[in-house]
Amino acid sequence: MYLEFYGLREPPFSITPDPRFVYLSERHRDALAHLLYGIGQGGGGGFVQLTGEVGTGKTTLCRLLLEQLPDNARVALVLNPKLSPVELLEAICEELRLDISGAHGSLKGLVDRLNAYLLDAYAQGLRIVLIIDEAQELSREALEQVRLLTNLETATQKLLQIILLGQPELRDMLDSPDLRQLAQRITARYHLTPLSAEETDAYVRHRLSVAGCARQPFSKLALRRLHNHSGGVPRLINVIAERALIAGYAREQNQISEALVELAAREALSHPIRRLPMPEPGWVVAAILAAILLAFWFWPRSTAPESEGIDPAASVATDTTPARSVPYLDAERSTCVWPRPGPRRPRHGTGCWRCGCCAPTRSTPNRPRNARRRSSPGSTACARGATSTSWRPSVGR
Image (cartoon, rainbow, N blue to C red; front, side, top):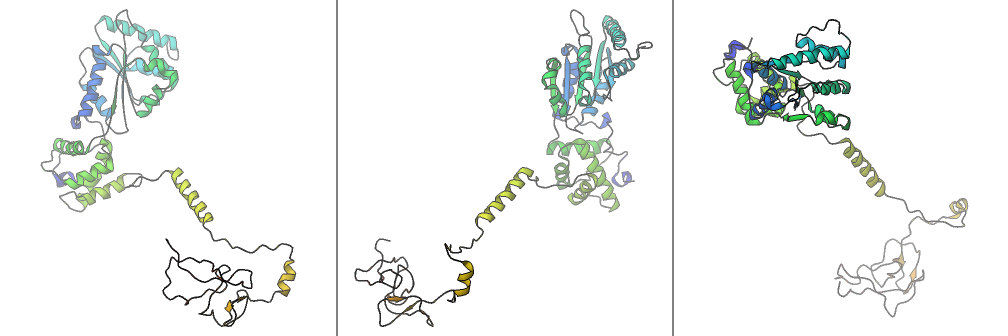
């Protein structure tokens, strides 16, 4: 469909583990070196563990390893490890083409057949390698049975070399205390990480070149956006790049832009694309509780006066005074009459600053803001029991 439009001989971003399209980054070369070490004499009969996230290329490296096997190597490849210990032994014997007639379902019979084959292969100078893919799916009983297979040995050498390929959960399984005997027999460990931004660019160019593309259809910004959405995982790179080429062909665009990669990522990825990390649920709950407590703390409270020994019904019936009286200062008297209704607060005379019933406003025109109230020696008493005071400026404030 889009192959002729972009000048391709075959699909460049197939998710099948084709060794021709393998791009060996520095991490993949190190991982392949560990696998070859396990098959050679350096392994010493122990375990070789290769782990990595989903889609980082573990199975592809395994296929590449099978093409680089030495002539004296015989391999048993187990792709479905969700088996019981007896079924696992039967699968291993079938991969090595052993005759297990009469030993089906018998753990001892299968181990005896396998031991006899390993001794015969050792006498012929052959190396027997067991590769278990998706090893994190092995049960603990099956893992223990695999460990017991390493006990098949001679006085100088182990008869079986075992390679475990799996996701990061395999490392967590082998770190458990009940599998410490197996963990101690692992002679080589390697964890395969995703590609960097530069390696993603080289990866896409390599696959397009193998497919026969003479020019690069992806722009630099599109390659950067492709790395951001895929996280450097080769399988996700293949899925998004394939969908971007289809979108470019449908729109007849020779150049794949970052907008097309964005659209392809939204269509190809099952989960919504999140540009920013989502907050942890615990922090969200804590923030909500803190907001509720702050709102409760600063909520305005009504300060109703306490009444002791007064009948509320009687008080309501007899109280006819207004809710808020206006203080008034008699012009001819020096005492404060409270409450005295009046049209407004008087603007002259001295006032009672202790009770606050009648404060002067224009007795001192240039009154500073930071002035404080002080009692006058010659003040008189007001109607509420406080002395009448005059205003004095505060010193030192």
